[in-house]
Image 1 (cartoon, rainbow, N blue to C red):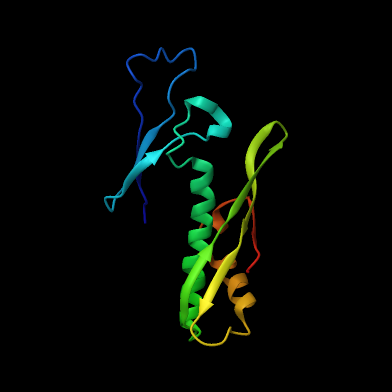
Image 2 (cartoon, rainbow, N blue to C red):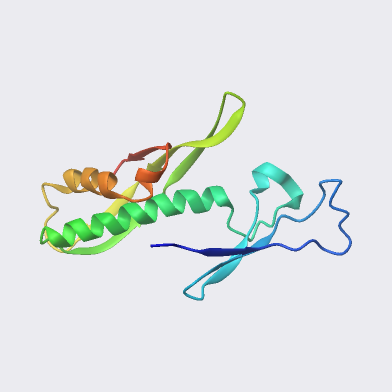
Length: 148
């Protein structure tokens, strides 16, 4: 299976570019027709960022959270548990190691509303979801899960 994303950026006519003073806003488009504004983080490039855009660091955190959630929902349904809602406010931490900056840790804070009593194996479901998450298995970032 191959997954694609189309990324488009274009320099504005009044931006010389070589002075490193150009807008970092760009467009992300996906095969299902979804397209939205993206940008470098304002924490990285300041006023050259487009604060209305999603930055790659935020998207990375969201991708880990989304993958965990989808895997968790699958495992819960397979175990016969009914989930009414799933919310997560995930947080990523940037660290500088050996002169390189990277997202060293992502902490998930899932809050699940169950239909019926909370399953006794909720934590085990989170551990299994982490082990089976395609995105978590693809990165060296320390992904933690701290359910609410």
